[in-house]
Length: 167
Image (tube, rainbow, N blue to C red; front, side):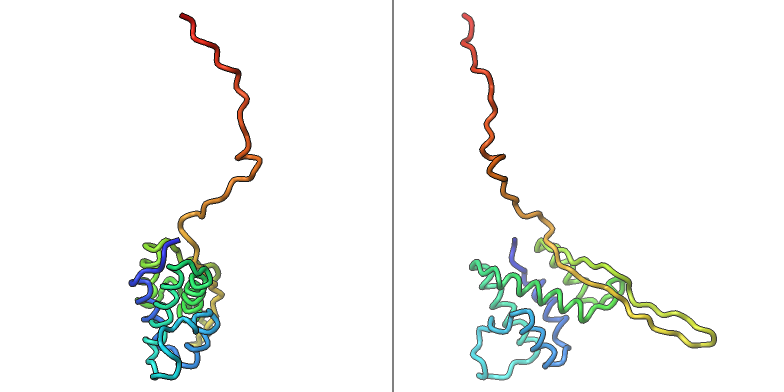
C-alpha cells in the first residue's frame, strides 16, 4: 500500500481545522494518532490545523518505516473525519472532493452506503428533515497479494518423459 500523499494530508487538515478543539482531540485519540506528534507535549499550544498536520506527518513517517498501526490510524482518522463532517456525499464540501481525488491517486477509494439526508414537505409550509444513514469506508483500490495455499504451490504436473528426437 502506498503512503498518503501531501495533497491527501492537506485535505484532511482542511476538513478538520474547524472542529472544536475538544472534539478534534477526541477524534485524534480515537484514531490512535495522538502520540504521533513530533512536538513535545505542553511545549507550545498548537492551533487546530497544526494539531492535525503534526500527527498526520508523524504517523505517515512511522507508516513509511513499516508501522502498520500508523497506517491504520491514518485511515481511521480519515474515515471518522468524513463520517462526522460529510452528511451527504453528493453535496459534500470542497475539501471532501479534494480528499476523494487525492486518496484515489494514493490507491484508496472513499465509499459509502445508506441514505442521504432529505427533507419531506408536509401540508402548509412545513418541512421535516430526515436524517441520513450514510456510512463511509476507505478501501484500497488495488487488491493485496493473496498467498497461494501449500497444496497449490506444491503441485507438479506429471508429464510423460520426453522421448529422444529421431535422427
